[in-house]
Length: 283
Image (tube, rainbow, N blue to C red; front, side, top):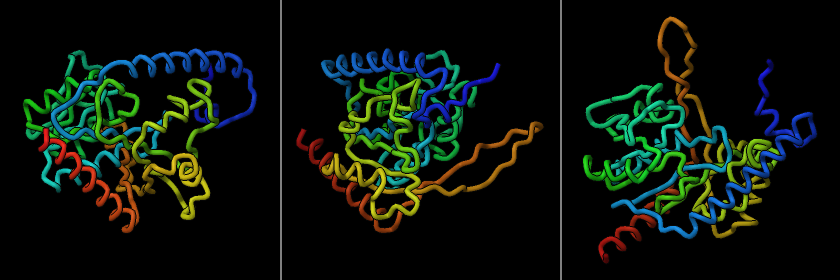
């Protein structure tokens, strides 16, 4: 039986044989999202003892979250913070409540157990605790207690509403920002586009030649002018050819920003961290 081409479905705005069924399931999914958002809006979020930043997106698929997480972690370490990466471990088959994928001693779990992205982060950020749990609070509490972490990065954390955060970064692919504009499974959206209001700043990936902001950056500036926006691109670090007889690493990509935007991002992070440290000192 032929498998559906979800990329094609999520990009197409036209009608095909599966559209009615997908539209029905999208409506049910949207209702579930609305009820979930309403429920979490009434609940008090749990807090971790340090600065918490979420790196996420609004759609399924890659927008550059992993390299952005690495970039942010490296910056925080350079600033003297004790960083911990908190992930859900999508695709992993771990059965414990919390799993330490890596720490100062090395990598403790593989992709089958922990999922691909946590292991990729562990390989890229040597010595940084990468901890996975369906409850990110438990992962962060362990990192704070065991590793004295005080800078927590929620990998793919935009939809994880149970945990309080100090900064919400959302990455948006400039080439296909919202697909066909529909919620899952008819489209690629994990939440309605209006939920971008929750974000503090956007990183537009793969902006190409749209330096004047005529694409998604221009739309966001018009609708959410108070939000900070940056552009980043990707280049391959190395190319790896698969070989069934030996293990190989996935393609790792780096997030690139212009020097001007890099200075702006650093200045903004410095401002945010100064404000956070003042709040902690007063508390």
